[in-house]
Image (cartoon, rainbow, N blue to C red; front, side, top):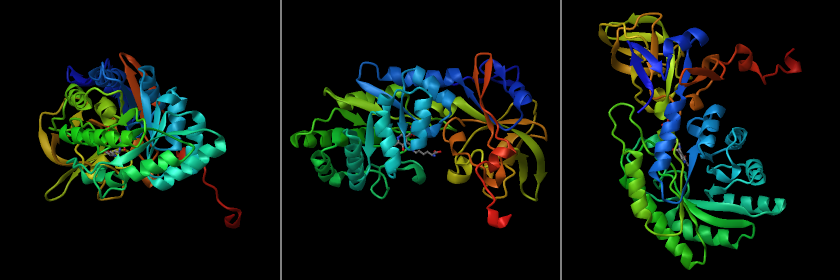
Length: 418
Ligand code: LLP
């Protein structure tokens, strides 16, 4: 459920018409619904009511400060993967003791910053990382709280680029090697072992792989108890899918129900790292048609947003629904919705039945709240689009459109070229 609905054939985001926003700020832009984000977070949270848990929003899915602030005020923590995400999370007011830090390539500098900020724990992904973290904690004079990220080797049936929990992926430590990693962690004086973590993949539309992974974590928990390690936290990562087209992912209630059952009665807190399920369907990309043209066997609708603004179709062949902002079209035509970037892969929709768009029309590319702006780039020297949040009839530009000056900020022409 989201708050992008048609009223008298005009697309609205809550109480604001999308074309009004376009008039005010120009195109392209990302548009987020405050009430949708809040509702998605609450539904997810409430599904786990009664079970000891901590929800850490996955910042990489959407890292805008306003969105992080909204989730912070709902009591959410953060799952971060870089010093930059740590910086954002803290700026937005997320409590450091609700921040978990994953990633295979944490730099010593970022680890130090995270330790000094007092984050909740590191999800450590290799023995070398563990040793580096121990050394940094020693230098600071503290103990680093950690979970070891296990690669549980479960099949998650999603796009190969976003599978993370299979043995050929770079993530985590192989479950067979986990006992020796924990033994090392136990020996290291400046490491405080708190949990076990995993993340098996993204956009999962079935519950079984989650249950299977959680079972593996529980088995490991028992083995670690025998080693004398007091594990209090199991982190199952994120990954719950959403509907882009006709997918039927489990409702958070179903997901939470299955995990509750698998957890059983133990004194352990469950940590969750949802991203897409919170923001994915809470945002759209709005773009304007520049031109249309046809070749012998294809029609192209050329819009002012491209793969640099939304790379998911080009990168994963992902489906994003395409809708008119004003329902004025009587005819549907098959077309490719393409951007201005000089790449054949620059498309937002391919061979799709869509309204017979004409120049000047506004187009809404749906389900663009997660991994959309956060993956945008300046390729082709295109300024990144504005981001707007609507709450009821209130509208706020939460990130202004980049200017040409922003494109070159930080660049220098060396003296030897002058
Ligand atoms: N935790 C960890 C350690 C992760 O790596 C991820 C996502 C999440 C949590 C959140 O997963 P979610 O609940 O959003 O599925 N760019 C891709 C998705 C990459 C996901 C990377 N990791 C896409 O556009 O589909």
